[in-house]
Amino acid sequence: MRFARRLPPVALVAALVAASTASAHVVPVPQFLPTGAVTTMSFAVPNERPEPMSAVTVSVPADFRIVRAHPTAGWTATLDGPTATWRGGPLAHLTVETFRLDVDVSAPPGPVTLTTRELYPSGATLDWPATLTVVPGSRDESLGSIDWGWTAAIVGVGLIFVAGLAVLAWRRQAVAVPTLPEQRGRRTGRSRLGRGSQPSGRQRRALRG
Image (tube, rainbow, N blue to C red; front, top):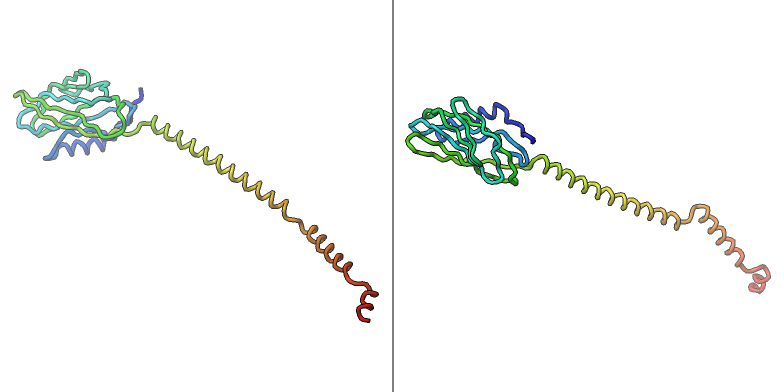
């Protein structure tokens, strides 16, 4: 089982700061999950209601599997199929708590939404969508590199074939063109033939008479 790398602490702190603003919402970290791997996710959960929060749940969609729900100080983690639940706290008004999950992702690349729900002693609930993106994993990348390798091999064979044809054509042209000595011999033969065809002295005298 292969685990993806965890997000650097700086990015996690930035997510917690973003979750504590006035328009806070549940922030999943990381925002990009590789398919075909187990990734540890963190959820920064704010409490915006004027009463303390006593529980929170995170539900994953199809093609996701929760491997483990990590315990959080003061909270008890339980797992029931696609839903992880933390109970305890409570989480005071306008404060943030972080909960962690190990999720095994087999979904195809694309956007997905996890559902988080905050529960309160009064019976009130508050749902937050946690949107993230599934990206190709290392296996898909290796398959892509194999495809590129086959493409390069085919192109290389084609270039060798074209080069062979060019060399063959050049050799045929070299055989068809006479060499310099052959050209000189042909010119000498022509000049001799020309002198042999001139009229003799008797013929010239007959012509003058």
